View: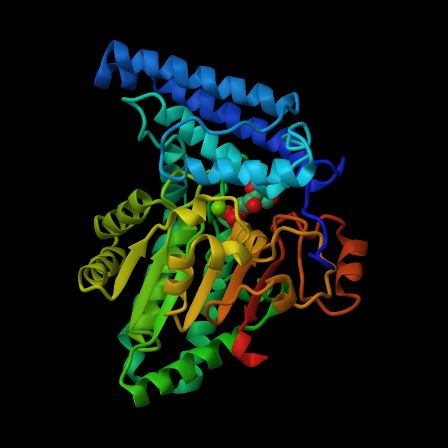
Length: 443
Ligand code: F6P
Ligand code: MG
């Protein structure tokens, strides 16, 4: 399309995409292999000799893939018979046609977004081809550990929520906004805790998530929280007069502390009456190391319920009943684990697009979702968020993202240059963040 900048790619030597494909992805793959190997005895205990065979063969497939990556081989079609394999293979064919030949669709020459997604899909394939360990989530240990390592912060945030909820009926609109704004920021900074930027190393929340907000405020490069608030308020007014409900969707990112912050925000939204329904969207396969799957979602709520900490377990029970009553619901459309940019959603996943159109506000958590929102392209930093979305806009939407990849739009003239002069890696060090809103209605 005319005027659309190129995709970020590892073909730009020295770029963050290049370093990711050269260093970080192989490190993640090696960890995956180690984890499977370390669990050999467990597989043996559960499945006998068959378990050992599965372990060996899965490792074989993964080592082969690591070698393909490191020697910049062409990306090859998937061979499993899972439902989305066809879609991946068609996507590959389309790219090969577009770029002329097979060789150009290689690990380093392809768009970064595509190869990075592809690696996680190939990990899934390797396991899937080896029953009985097909359903083994190789990232589960890390996700569980990061949840427990953030326990103190989880308790703090649950205690905070309980305090807010206990007095929620008596709050003025301004006070309600202040609480909303705080919890939105807690959920934003929760995104620091992903395990893929750290290649699986501990990256849990150690400090108090509430006390640190003031000092983090200047690091929010774009802050549209006022517009997010007014969107919710007008949705509420509209719902009252039309006798309908307000629905907020949260497109989740990482399990562990980040998920807790998202659940806390969602709890506040329904407890305050700002929303009547929250739809959570997670991943249907293990993804980008720490992304939330259905299992992680249920497990986190179970763990919260089972806590010895009184507030935490009370809140956990509340979450369970939100799910039971249908106030909250969990969804995992396969589109979220495909490589597409979100501007393709209307054409490639029309059911999901139509579903999101039913929301009054969609919150997109994290870096990968941001990359998909703006197509992971080398945009000028002053290009408007609406332009970079390239027509995507099923509902008013807001990205809550800490910056981990070199793409950022919607900045003021000069803002990026100033940042670059002080901190050349401002886009990738996950120190900065955005609360970036867009609605086609505002145009
Ligand atoms: O460099 C970007 C990255 O590490 C990618 O692996 C991925 O896009 C992202 O960060 C993961 O972060 P998040 O969990 O916030 O999507
Ligand atoms: Mg993630």
